[in-house]
Image (cartoon, rainbow, N blue to C red; front, top):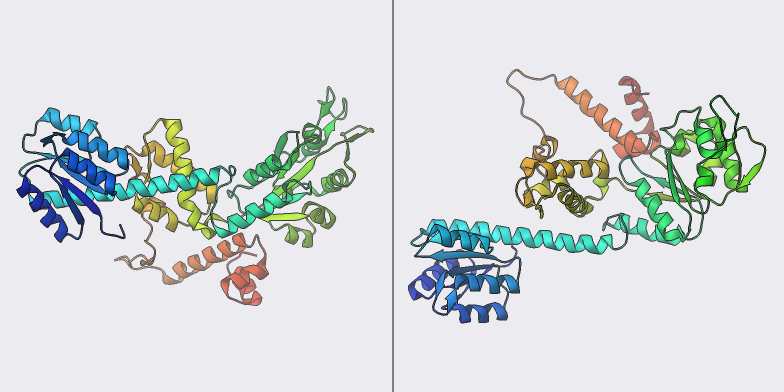
Length: 457
């Protein structure tokens, strides 16, 4: 906690009140005291406290009454119950009522110090996760796409501006960034009454994709025993989402272009033109402009699809969104698995924020699903995270492993590191070598030489 933690000590014994006030005051805490239940409730009503330490037996009530009053004022504040007449039954009763811990007098100074430290850590953890949940609720109110980072906020603003226009939109981003979620959000804001229909162009065999998109008539090919409408007709009045549009066969691209320009299609084997009212949103994780230059994608179709481009940044470039997304997924899987999960420890969040996430948001969701299945407590700890996340070097730490006793192959290691950064640069720039060279701070000629030397043409 950035400011001195506030602690309320409640005990009818003056010596105990003064002992705890002096002990905890020397630890840097702001301590207030009360001698009975009425005094405690008055203090709680007047100011917030991070921790309450209360005797179980008071002249005008019990420590459980104080516990209830403290929780009513601040559900996140922790309460430690102390007593000179400890029994198993009273301890169980206190813990069931929500006490953080139960101590029997006399206790050692080190014992109370440790208990206070742990209780205040719990208070900070609960408050941090509660604040994160509030931010999450505020963001979720705007739709399923989550993000508070400047780049995501700019994406949301552009999305809302173009949603109702009906223009074709090209959503670009690495695998796992949430391109389909953006497309669904566009459809939701468009005001179109028809359905949202999604198709992964890379998942359909080349010989079937034309029939899948445009439909076919009976007898058009072997097995075509009846007329079948395609996805364009299914999406009429709504949105057709073409995921991985860069994988469309070259021979099919002119037919898609005509459908976009004319608003009409022909089924495979048919002669009749069918009017369709479809808004096209496409997505790719490839460099379509580069594919146009290499003759693998039609230039006219590229410009027809790319009237407005929406770029989703990779998760590593918006790390401030990781806690928000992680809690969103944790709530989802805590409910699915019926687990009492409330959030993450500070160390677990730090590790998540430091991780590179090559699989982007999809990898984060899978990682949190795993943690939700393994975690036995209320907060996800590093023990429930994958080794790749929890054993990484902390931010600012030494990222190089020590030299093993048997020595190492320095040239081989440097070559592996060079290859990895070249792959990352090409991946981030979607194969654009000019941009990759800029990203790595080398000339285009140097990049080309390195790629040739490592057999990465």
